[in-house]
Amino acid sequence: MSSFKPNRFKVFPRREPGVTPVPKGALSIYDPIYLGVDTRGKSVYVTLMYRNILIGGEPGAGKSVALGNIVSHAALCTDVDLVLIDGKIVELLPYAPVAEEFVGNDITKALRVLRKLQADLNERYLHLARTGRKKITADDGYRAKLVAIDELAYFTVTVGTKEQQEEFRTLVRDIVARGRAAGIIVVAATQRPSADIVPTSLRDLFGYRLAFRCATDSSSDIILGTGWASQGHTAVDIEPEALGVGLLRAEGGFPRRLKTAYLNDRHVNQIVRRAAHLRRAA
Ligand SMILES: Nc1ncnc2c1ncn2[C@@H]1O[C@H](COP(=O)(O)OP(=O)(O)OP(=O)(O)O)[C@@H](O)[C@H]1O
Image (cartoon, rainbow, N blue to C red; front, side, top):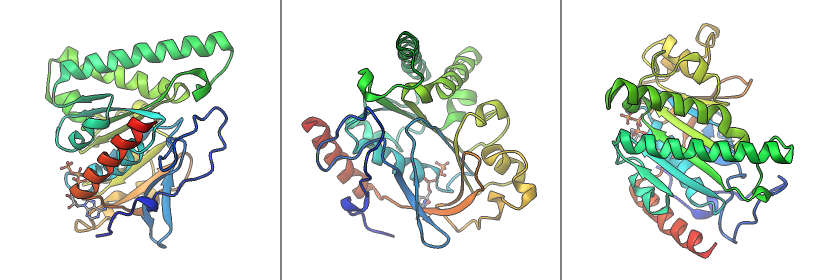
């Protein structure tokens, strides 16, 4: 188990135009996010601004830990608001003190929060249309948002009425599809990589896909993309004891095996305390 060191999160030069300067010691959502190491021991980062990430795999394979790495980075950024939707409650609850919204296993509240996000999205698009531009930057006066959803299936098949589940699906699809350009990032995790939870049309909207161990080639393909298993890239091959090992595929690239960084509860609590301090000071 690696121990957490705050300076492990490298701060990269921010070259994007219109990025709000962040206070010393804080991170930016425009920075690459540290996820773990690949098979050669090289650090693996993902840049999520203007992108989304889908995380899938069987129970206990490492999805929530990966999600926690991303949310921890975002918490330490003073230029992004966190919207956390957690059907399991306990995975994202530690970040609630620094979140704009925290939703537990309450689909009515989840829908209210997603409708509000959609209205915000519509306003951002109107602004883009009025100014003749295609992408929101911090200069536009809109803050980036990171929407983390841990467990898609909980809200789309388990709780609520059929109508609520359908509305949840529709809202998530719209926010994933249109959110990127508007500075709204979606990070979604599911332990049920099946076509009813993640239809191809939704999967294909995610620029990054991270598949932890899956039971079948078809579940692995549901996360990574059709045809990868037949080319030898399948999360079925990940050994059951290899917790936190997954295949990461970035837009148009080959799946790359990685082991995620592990933050234990103490690390997360330290990060949240630090994040609260940075956010108050910003
Ligand atoms: N990168 C890692 N390094 C070491 N251990 C890990 C790592 N990732 C996960 N684990 C171990 O595996 C356990 C399960 O991980 P995690 O909670 O992320 O799984 P999950 O896929 O979200 O499961 P579920 O779908 O049941 O919620 C963790 O509690 C931890 O003990």
